[in-house]
Image 1 (cartoon, helix red, strand yellow):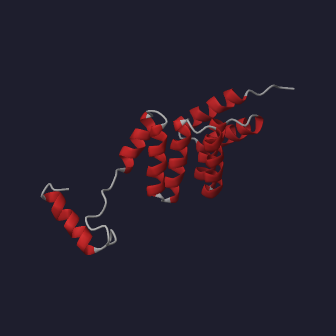
Image 2: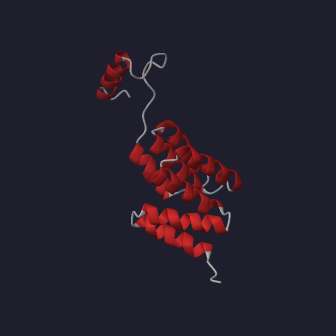
Image 3: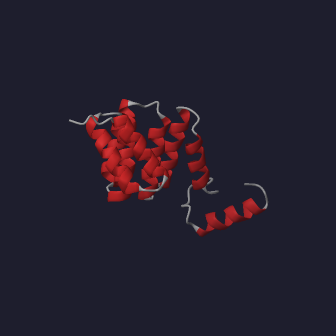
Length: 147
């Protein structure tokens, strides 16, 4: 019987992700997670499940489990944030990415937050962001350098 090393499978999955080969990465992470229940393996498995299969709710549930098991690993927050972005939930993604930064400096999280960008609150918080008054007041204030 051949002994399969989950760490070697995990490393191979990361290499596949670096080459943008999501299907190969998914296969590696599934095998690694099936052998050992390690939070980081499950987190990358969740990311691949969301990307390749479109099962973002299942992936988020798996991410929540990994965060409960290992709440001080910033990479777990990064992967969960990426899944929120796949769902189009930018606010939740920013929130979870910021929580990840509280666990330690992570250049990937900083880059992801920079890519997303941040929005300032609307000038008139009692009106919706889409309200024309908020929109044009925000433009005027930013051009005047007051915002």
